[in-house]
Structure formats: structure tokens, C-alpha cells
Image (cartoon, rainbow, N blue to C red; front, side):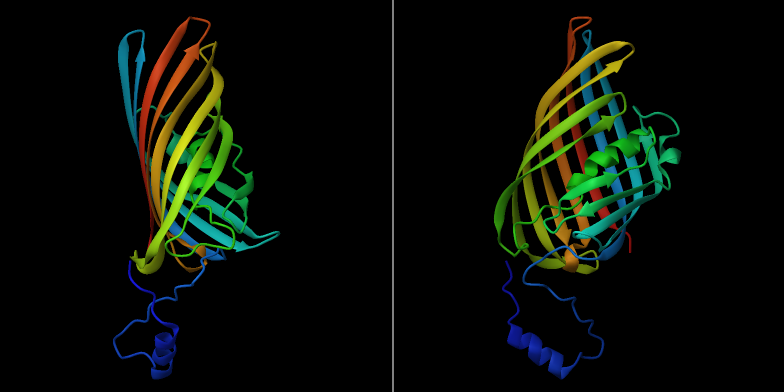
Length: 270
């Protein structure tokens, strides 16, 4: 970890002025909190799913690209977050045709609280698997902060919950997260505070497919790295998880084991 720059040095530098040809670094707040900012991003997801149905292995692989515009603005009681899907592209199997085209231009809104919680989410009222998944992903787009804001070299835990409809099922996910911060560093054209998260989560759900009701339950673990700039502006996100789920079809007396691995990257578009 690099030592903090003494405040007296910052004062002397400011008095001396900026040297020719040297670009001043953005400020590093001692305590990071969420404030107003705007950013454009590309969100890339790779998902690998393996399941066994009546003794036959089934494997699907899907890669999706979402280009997003995100804005946080002053609201009541904290901030208001707005997310727009500018464009989308998918490659692979397991997604209905036209999903990418149907996701373009869709808008989400939510209240962003000082600790990073997103509540009162208003999502597009369309049946689209990309939009459904993005509604789940919103809770993890930004990390939760400890009370009073985040500092370098801190550790804390929190619990997140998300639920909603996903294609032909409803899902609920509860995650227990251990978080820590490293130090500020140069990242994607800015100065970012690094957040590391280790998560263990459970998944439950129910639905109906081809006239057959089913329930599902499972658990998994994941990790994430966020880099946030001043005001909590997202600079980069790298995330991965592995999940084991059992799908129970009581009408036909089958339990289908499913293994899923997901890798996400979110990068600022400069």
C-alpha cells in the first residue's frame, strides 16, 4: 500500500502551481461517499451452464455485451440513479431471438442511498431475459459502503437481497458479503479506491415450464473488485461466481442438477 500524500505537500503544490506538461491528479477524498456523477460503460458477461437431464448432459454458453449510460443525481432522500441500455449484443445459446434488439433504449431508475443501497427500482415492463437479468445485477453494480463512508484499508460485512422474475421463474438471492478496501491507484484514466468482495449466497425460486411446475434451490460463492472514483463514480468492475442449483420437477419425479459459472467485466467507455 502506498502512503497517503501529506496534506502539507498538497498545499505547497497548489501554491507553486502546476508544472508545464504535468496533468494534476484528481483529488483523493479521505472518506469516499456516493454523490452525483455520470458515466458510460460496456458490460460484458460470459456464462457457462452445465446440466444433466435424463442422463444426457446439456451445455450452453452465452456472451452478452451491454452498452450502458449511468447517471446519479441529487434526489430525495439521497440520490437518484438512472441507467439506460444504449445498445446490446449477444452470442451463443440459451437466449430468445430478438433479445438484444428488445433491450436497446430501456431505462431503469432507483433511489441510491448513502451506503449504496438501491431501492424502489423502476424497471422496463418488458419480457426480455437481458432486462430481467440486469434488474438482478443492479444490486451489485455498486458496492455497499460502511457507515460514514469508505476509507483505505478497511474491512466490513453486509448482506444483500434481490428478487424478481427471470424468464419463466421467480428468483430470490441472499448474499453475505465480506468487503475490504485497498488503496487509491490509477485506473482507466482516473484515480480509484479498490474494493474487494468475497460473497457466499443462496438461491431459491419457482416457476413453470412446458406445463410442469418446478422449484429450485442452490448455493454459490463469488468475488468482485470495484474501483470507485471521487463521488463513488464507478471506474471498473470485475466479478465472477460459481453456483450449484438443483431443479425439482415433482410432477415427473426428476431433480436436475445445474452448474453455472459467470464472469462479468464493466469498464468505463472513455
